[in-house]
Amino acid sequence: MVKKTRVEALATREALLAAALQVFRERGVTRTRLSDVAERAGVTRGAIYWHFKDKAELFQAVCERGTLPVEALLAQASLNAQRDPLAMVRQLALMALTQLAQHADTQAMFDVIFHKCEFTAELAPVVAKNDADRAACLSQVQQLFDQAVACGQLPPTTDTFLATHGLHAYMVGLMHEWVLNPESYDLAVCAEPLIDCYLAGLATRPPICPPDAG
Amino acid sequence: MVKKTRVEALATREALLAAALQVFRERGVTRTRLSDVAERAGVTRGAIYWHFKDKAELFQAVCERGTLPVEALLAQASLNAQRDPLAMVRQLALMALTQLAQHADTQAMFDVIFHKCEFTAELAPVVAKNDADRAACLSQVQQLFDQAVACGQLPPTTDTFLATHGLHAYMVGLMHEWVLNPESYDLAVCAEPLIDCYLAGLATRPPICPPDAG
DNA sequence: CGCAATTTACATTCATGTATGTATGCTTTT
DNA sequence: AAAAGCATACATACATGAATGTAAATTGCG
Image 1 (cartoon, protein in one colour):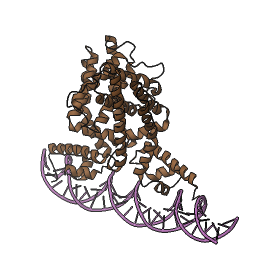
Image 2 (cartoon, chains in turn green, orange, yellow, brown; image 1 turned 90 degrees about the vertical axis):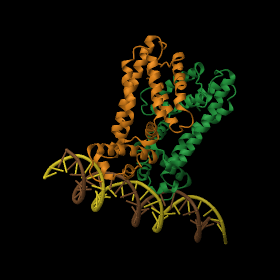
Image 3 (cartoon, protein in one colour; image 1 turned 135 degrees about the vertical axis):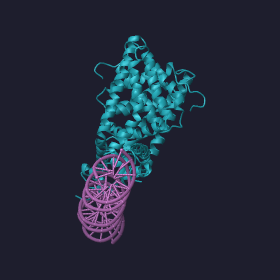
Image 4 (cartoon, rainbow over the protein chains, first blue to last red; image 1 turned 45 degrees about the vertical axis):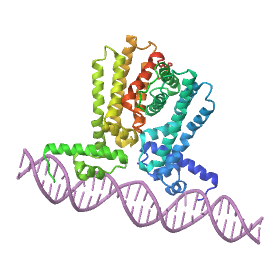
């Protein structure tokens, strides 16, 4: 079998992405040979070079396929933000953790990103996209926190910059560590108390940044 | 220059470790060639094979050199624990972040571990040691939280397992993200408000684990 | 002199990228 | 509507370079 119809070609591409995600997870991105990916997808190495320029581009595609749902959440956030900003932050965090807890592919992706990947020069485009996404996300959340301060949901002394970075770190850490041991606790259930605990901390003793420290 | 005295040999070993840390950070562990490490250390590749079996063992040595200070902190903790357990947790967290904020080598090490390394089968011994260390650390901290509950420093309903994992995730996330942008904020200064914020959350709205979720 | 510490030289393995082959689907023309 | 022509979607083969591990050679210390 050589030539496929367009939809079949798309299916091949999808199979390659799925296979890549698995092999990346097993062998690490750098040690992954494209021949393994091809074999797992049921094609040869040539097919990869048709769909992707090289391994870096393949990796980028794998990442983008996975980060899409999170971006959609953020888009929502800016719209419905005005009413109850703190609840929106809470919902965003919960949805991200729930997505992770429920979707095996999401778990695989974050396992790769957190523990099976080396972010060096050759992955510069991915890193750049990551940075941009993170900056956008942080900025959005900080705006929500600012609104929460304005609403009186958070104390007026709250350093929303630090609060944002703290929450972000918390999320990253939770995902980073939970993916290592998904059996250690039920994330779908525990996400809520974990998030609420941090938010309660913000409300009762918000971080206050000394001058010139950020 | 060929043969050295014993102390000089130790110096060579140290130079190799320092060089490896740098090159690991620049190129990622997997893409690092031992020839680069040797060159940076001012020796040839053969010297590496004298001191270390292979790259994995070199990496392990680099990690162990860096994780030593943290272990010392934990050893302290179990001793002075009885009086004010929550303050002990606080101090531990602060010291870890301070160590990171002040020592360039520590920053380099965590940058490598978090962003420049793929934890796959070939690094199994390192992973095993990491797991053991983490488990020990978590167990220690959970004991402190248990004592804090007993002292009345934390509400009796507190799920100390979740509290521990939450704090650990927080720490990991803070280090993981701050190392990416050490200029984004002054960690040495902000560590205190960040930690206190989380601990305040624990005190006012501790995580409560539903049955059978952990 | 024998061993510790390091260099040099060598063989081997292995993944990559590319160049080329090829057959099929798609399109256009008449 | 049928056939030709072209682009697509891969497979195959090859050349290349690069890093590794080991074995042998070298030299200085005790």
